Image 1 (tube, rainbow, N blue to C red):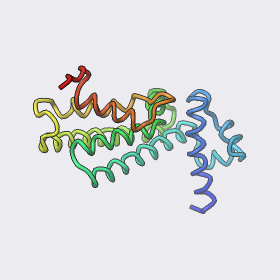
Image 2 (cartoon, one colour):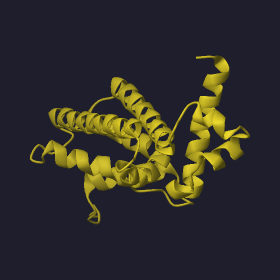
Image 3 (cartoon, helix red, strand yellow):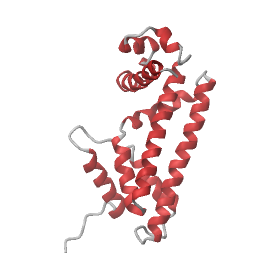
Image 4 (cartoon, rainbow, N blue to C red):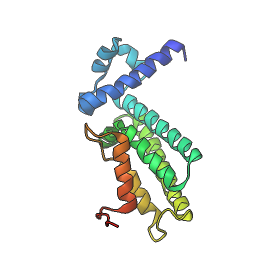
Length: 193
């Protein structure tokens, strides 16, 4: 692939994210993308024949990036600390929240390429959950998590916490810290000692 072609592709993926977040799935089009990139629509069609091909390609690359960061964090931490760092990392990828919400619209894609990408993403999603469940087990072994709770239940609490989005005046570290506190200590008021 030529250098210019790689630059176009990278720019298309960045602009795809921007357009999806601004206009949504229904408002996304190759016409809008070509206008934002100041290129001909035919250039986009050299890479992608259907908008779902481009969107699922973008989503897959995003999920792969998150997976790599998860693996990097897991290589430097263990148990509950890994899970806390993952939660913070998930919060930093707040565009994932929207991508999760449009996932259903892509299921019925007319594109075989998009359907295959969705299957690959489902596989990565399963791998993420497995990694999280495995960290719960490690945390149990370290005495950091109650052993009476199923690994998958604890993993689900962490995994679905990423759907909590920070408000405009709340930073990610603060929200991640609060969510981790709720997961670790519950919602009951703390007793004064």
